[in-house]
Image (spheres, rainbow, N blue to C red):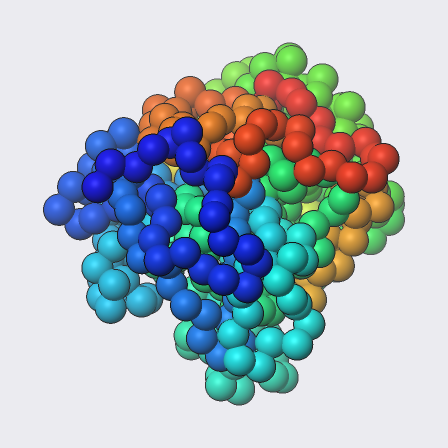
Length: 418
């Protein structure tokens, strides 16, 4: 049945009652490939909430690279794990703002009508790690909207009650949907994993990108001194606006990027450029960095390990240029440096980080807001690296800027990119 895109923001049911069907952008295994083709609009059944689950009416959704991978079926098809075998389709989207519409048995904190944002970490309440170690260590841990079926690119989504956070009233629906995955990831990396302290020095790769704009703000708020690596002067000025001491244009040091399989001559040349880069970082910060904020992976990791100070920390959450890292480990053990892996955040960290958004001390940085019809386009832009920052999708909201009910600085609207 054809879905009328002009009616997506309209509902004929009140909170507490679900319609039988909803509009959703769906990926199916037989059409995986380019996002423009893999995402197709379908009418699907609305799920019912189970115990300790909540159905949220999505007002706006955030776009992340994970659902480019879901569309492509790389590095593995999402259909092979999580709850996808049960349902046979994938609705992406790992960020959302919305309204609680129906709650399942056992939910006491939230009620229909509550305005919320959704964090994307899910885990079984029965896993012991959830109740004493960290939900991120639970064997059932999954990222909602990527490893699970019911993401935010639909009129309704199904989440665990623990995933809900109060929606900051100083943000519109589209602003509130833009920050969760990247901001909460950066918060855990710096605050929990690195125990960031005032006065410390931090090197941030991709400082004008989705992760980097929050890492930069977190450093400034904590009293740490950050230098950001960017790809243009305009992006560098944004990073300085967000609180960085200064920036470095990576194009000046393009030769430091590791591709893998370098000849001895090429590696010697590459290492020389890395030395020059490290010297520039030290000149800007006044010393070697205590922390290097990593998510680029293969191309930059050897330089990160070399550049961080003795006993310093390299914290990494991704490998956008490759996950097969190749670096000179002597600079690690001889200088007693640490490598820390980090993956999203737990509910407590998400709540603490969200309080800083509510207080206006950390601000989302949003590039573009698209209508519901823009889901395939947004992911294709990401796939082709033609986007310049975070993208939000309107679902239940009719226009960008809707939903703000309190005074506050709101999001920074800027053309930014990694």
